Image: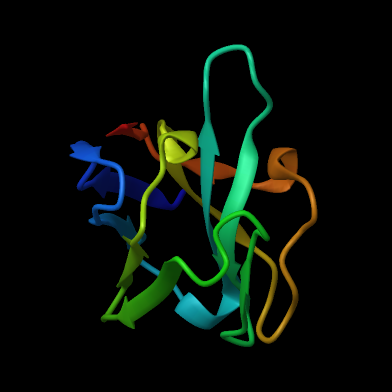
Length: 130
C-alpha cells in the first residue's frame, strides 16, 4: 500500500503563501502509474479536489484555485514528493488538506470522485485569517 505523509500546514494572513508537501512511498512505486491529488475539507462540508497530476503527468486545477496554486512533483526511486504551492491565500482556502493516491496505470487519467482514491494521508491544517 502506498504511504502518504503531508506537511507544511500553518496559519497565515490573507494574501500570504504556503507550500504543502506530501511524501509518497511504496517499495515498488512507479510514479507514472499513479494519480496523485490534493483535496481539502472543512467540517460539515464535502471534500473538494484542489489539483491532481495523472499518469501522463498532466496537471488539473479546481477553478477556485487556478492561477493561485501550483502543483509539482519530484520523482525519486520508489517514492515521489508532491508539492502544492499556494499563493494569494484567502480565508476561503482554510481547510484540512489531504494528499491522495490511486493506481491507474501508465498514462491514464485520474478518477473523477474522491472515493476512488485508495490511499490517503493524515491531513495538514491550513488556516487563513483576514
